[in-house]
Structures are given as C-alpha cells and as structure tokens.
Length: 438
Image 1 (cartoon, rainbow, N blue to C red):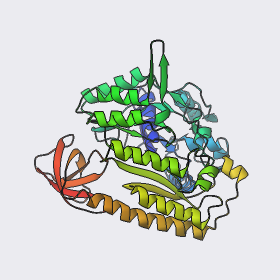
Image 2 (cartoon, rainbow, N blue to C red):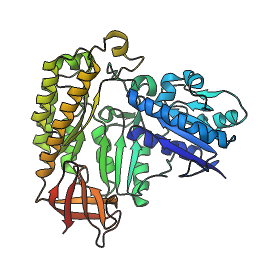
Image 3 (cartoon, rainbow, N blue to C red):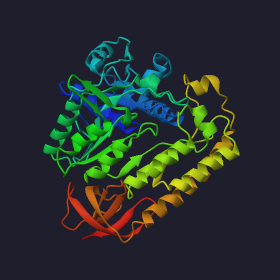
C-alpha cells in the first residue's frame, strides 16, 4: 500500500480535520512519519494570520527538492489557505498537484487520481451541510490518551479581522448522538480525555423531533459517559457562554475547570471595530460569573495588538483588563491584514509595525507575569493530573495537565501514560507546575 505523510498547521480543528482525512484515505494509503518515503504529502493549512501562511509557503518551497528526487510524489494542500487563495496557489506554488478546501475531503480520492494523471485538480466548494459526522477519524499522531472531537463546523460571527466564515463556511452542528458515540468509543479504546471543538462551541444547537440539544446539554451527555473521561472544549465566544454551561461544569468533576475565552481587546472602541458584539463591561461580567460559579477555573484568552485605529489608551485598556482578569495564559499576536475580510476592505491598517511590535511585547511581558502569578498560587496544592507523556527534558519524568489545563512535570516512578495521578506542587515556572506524586 502507498504511504501518506500529513503535516498539520494551525489550530486544533485542523488536527481533527487531518484525522478525518486519514480515515477517508485509509483504503488507499498507510500513514508514514517520513516525508522521504511518502508517495503523497498533504499540507493542512491555516489562514488566520499572515505568518501562518508565510510558514506554509516556506514549507512548500522546501518540498521542491524532494519532488525533484521523486517524480511520482504528489503534494496536496488542504484547509483554510486552500479555500482562501484557491486557483492562485497553482500559479504561485508550482510544487502543488492539487488543493482541497475544508468541506471537500470526501473528494480527495478523485482529486488524487486526477493529479496522478496530470490533470488540474482542486475542489474548494463550501457546504452548508458537511460535518463529516459519519466518518470515524484515524487517531494517527496522538498520545492515545487525549483526543479531539469536532462537534460543529463554520462560523456565523464575521469578526471584521477574521477569514474563518469565508474559509470554513456558515455554522452547522453535528448530530449529538454521533458525538456521544464517538466519545464513548474513544473511552472504551483507552482514551481518558476528549476536547469538543468548534469555532464557537457555545452556539452548538441540534433540533430533533422530540428533543433539542444545546452545548451545555452536549457537555453533560459526554460527561455522563464515565467519571473517568475528562471533558474539555474550545473555543468559547464571550457573547454566548451561558450560566447553564457553567453550572454543568460545576456539577461534574470530570468536566475540566478551564475556559478559553478570547477577548481580543480591552477597548470598547476597538471591540466595536472588530465586530465582537460585546463590550469590555459585558466580558468582565462573564468573568465574574465564571469565578463565582467555578472559583478554581483557569481562564485563557486571545489578544490582538495594533488593530486598526488602536490608540495608546485602547492599548492601555487591554493591559488593565488583563490585570483585572488575571489570565492563566494567552495567545497573543499583532494584527495582520487578511484579504477578503471587512477590516481589509473598510478599515485602514494604520498602526506602524514598530508600534505593533512594542505593544505586543508589552502584552507578552505582562502575561508572563500573570502566568507566573497564576502558577505560583498552585504551589503547595495537590492537583490531579492525567499523564500524557514523557518529559522532553528528562526520561525520568512524566508530564500531564490538571483540570485547569496547566502542564505539570513530576518523577516517573511507577506511573504510566493514561494514569490519573495526584501531584503535590512544590514549585513552578510561568509555564509549568513541578511536583511529586502523593
């Protein structure tokens, strides 16, 4: 059987998509870790930020030499970048044989056949219905302990800076029965943690003749599979996170006390330009409610520095919000224009690059301090950790994450991957808890 090598860039959703692709192509290819021996290389791409696309273009240039050595090698581009740029990719990246958008993976066998015959092959059709809910993903590159489950696709929010609604289409939810079935099978196959994925999981909704299911209902159904199956989710939109969901999280000990809640900016003026449809005050009210219902909940976020028209006061509003919330960690970026978005078409990218970098550096420096403070507050506590693997720095140490999604490193002893272990935290860094099993 021929060999397939998949490289995945970007978000967790792309990881889940790559597992769907591996399943679709499993009758024709076996997965290979080596690009050198592959008959087919697939690059699953992200378009959310310009640096992600530039990284992928650099990778494609690196593959030119490999293709010269192996004339039979096929190279395909998948995902959001394929959807966003479409036919231009064939002109600009000669190494490519075919491209497929996020809703076109069922057509991959035909695209591959066409490409092998020298035909131009691409499919970037966006679907209003495709969720791949009948395909069992192949978990080819995981730890056998944690798995992602895509519960919905697309997005209806149209934030002014974001390409996702244009590259992944409109929002549609999976049948919750297929999600619970997938999670149940994972548990019986030895997995001990699932992360429910969507661009905005809080807007998940499924209507059946005798029953409707919202996201809080779905989380509860998955939590009830077993108390030994941890449940996480990503990503939440502040406008939709409900008290009902928070109360479900408080009710079940296996639903992790961690919420990724992107704020993007602490300034109402910038939030309005971003079309985030909430205010600073509303966001902080949601934070207060989270801390009221889930006092030990860790909160992370996304922040964009240097968005169109951002003043120094807008930037300071973000800094003050970060301090008020005390995020456990954050994903922080400087704004980059994405072609086709409202911001690109109607707003001026008027913040000089050096100033974007300066503001981003200030945000990163503050977040390092906040992350250290958050982890320091755990020193002396005993936390439950799901063992995920061997530490990169020492074969005698294991690592895992606690309910708050914090990485914890500890001596191996007799513990193994997949175990739940209680760890007494003795010290920390800004990124890691360090301790001993008790």
